[in-house]
Image 1 (cartoon, rainbow over the protein chains, first blue to last red):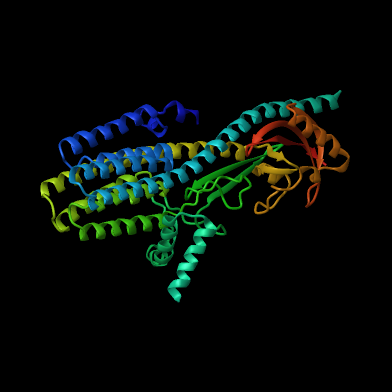
Image 2 (image 1 turned 60 degrees about the vertical axis):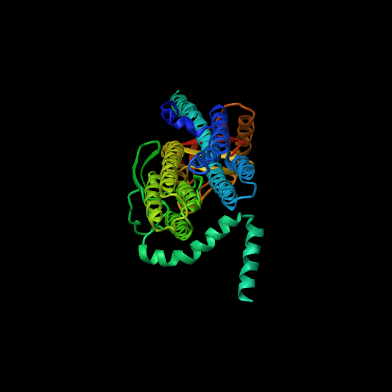
Length: 153
Length: 325
């Protein structure tokens, strides 16, 4: 049982939030928006990276991923507006999809997390109960042996 | 009129359950489609786990099937249980262990995933190449978190990539095919990366579940009667405790007061030991006479110790037969 925790691999460490890694991802996303979109004027392909950031945010922080989606969505719309001079329906659509994905991912992950938290708590309680049971078992065995001995005397 | 009533129902459902609109839509969709698919599939879907036919007399599906092989020893009875897992429910409905349940139905989730994949595909082929409707493939991908199938995310990713490829050829072209191809290729990579993250998340959840199950089995298998007593009632009792009382396995002592099962003369002593145990002491009482509903009473040795249960302080009680009355 403890082995699962001890044998946690590098991959499994990604189940817990890593604020530094997340900050780097957000920084990279902002960088892409400014360099690829604003500087080079490329509007496609790079936006897919935002979804990875939103998915990671959803997995680590639940519905708070909506804020990340809002950041990237509004940034994308703003930069498109600066470049084209009008509110592009395509950019707006992307922003809406980002928010939708963030909401769905966040909701699902939060529900699962709630369940996993319950299992973790029950795990802790059962592990403690098992540990105490061993001690009580020994006590019970002593009690069982001492009574017949007293009766013999 | 009819549609306004259904909208009213939908609104009421939203108000009562405080669910998100997504969940309401998903439930409605599942309600409409599940009878057809149940007819097709006949059995509950148990992807990822071996399907086990229900044993005679046991409720079908969604249970742990517990087979009992018992042998008696002079002082106490040892029970060996062979537990076969049918679905991911944590305990049998009639179990006294009160395991944590997850509202999971693989069939319904599978249907929901397939339907959402189809919807996204239809939307994608009816919209221009430049419109990234295929991003919504993230939704069925994340629905696999509910699915009791470890490799579910990769299967859904594979199907999504196939559908993305198909829609690349079927969608009306409004942009450079090269850029559209690059766009979809990059998104497919994102889907694979996300599937890996989800798979990893599911794996750690499964580890937790199996760990919890192991602890639970250890307690369930204990030859000594184990119970947790809190706020004047039994909160947990293992199988040996049921056997000790000749209790019907379907009935549960959970919720009853242990003091009501003890001979009146010894009640105060046991009550005092329980009180001391809640204060941190480790107490014991030998030769406690327990009143059984059917047949002879039984004499047991009992030991007490405090334990944390359901986030509250309770008392862990172990009992072993000291001799028949």
